[in-house]
Length: 356
Ligand code: SP5
Ligand code: ZN
Image 1 (tube, rainbow, N blue to C red):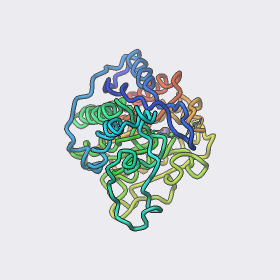
Image 2 (cartoon, rainbow, N blue to C red; image 1 turned 30 degrees about the horizontal axis):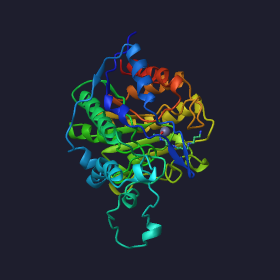
Image 3 (spheres, rainbow, N blue to C red; image 1 turned 45 degrees about the vertical axis):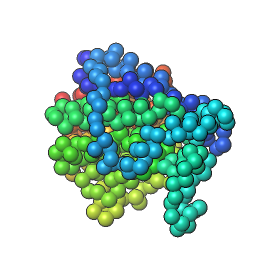
């Protein structure tokens, strides 16, 4: 069977070369590399999926999901960093903050915007692993366009679509970036579906990590439900500070946020059982559309998580999720290059079965 799911991508995604990550004070090679997009695209194309380019969209929806100051910062910080001579004169080839104006530092002082690029680098960033370089902005914005294009397909009647977003997005909050994510592609897709007429949207996040950004963007809202299964953040895994079961939403959004942390080592059976719990909750909402944060890093081979899911598990997940409602799949993490393509193909084949 040839793969019937439209794949949307932006060639600009290849221009983001984070050139590693600073983890615990040292620069490591990093796993969020441009080749991820190339292997995903090649595998989906080989499976028969129609591939289309992302269409450019204006910033209207992006600016309702994110603080416009974050958007402006990401668009300009590389040029400012370069202009300040940090690469040429100091050997700092990527934007890496060294100072974060957290509540612990400010203790009530007003948040100022210091003009120096090396000072401002920490204003919207919450870790040292999410580097910005010369082509990063074009890729970041291209990923948003891919998500908006795929959401547009489903918003106008397609049963399934997949956005090959790179860089990923689910760790990006309304006003901050981190976790290899800059702008929240899945949140933008969910908001676009709301604007297109879906009264209730369900976001299902099956990346190995908790999507703290998406959770917080919709934390106060009942119209976009968020459910996530992920490795237990309390067991030593990113994002460490969020993703616990007692985070249920706030105000009108209370009850519309679900976290199911899983023990390291959890395989297909435990993972799919947890997915079923989320699917039961989601189905009760009668969602008009589903957004899937499709991280492939729960796979057994993945270097960034201790979950042990197989391609058969991903296929089954695709089947069960797509049975809920029309679904937009947004690429999130997944870092083991040899298996990334087969995992994506398996998921979308399952989705096509579930949607039939
Ligand atoms: C989108 C996404 O999957 N983001 C995940 C970010 C988590 N990165 C944590 C990196 C920690 C350092 N890497 C250690 C690799 C050990 N094999
Ligand atoms: Zn992840």
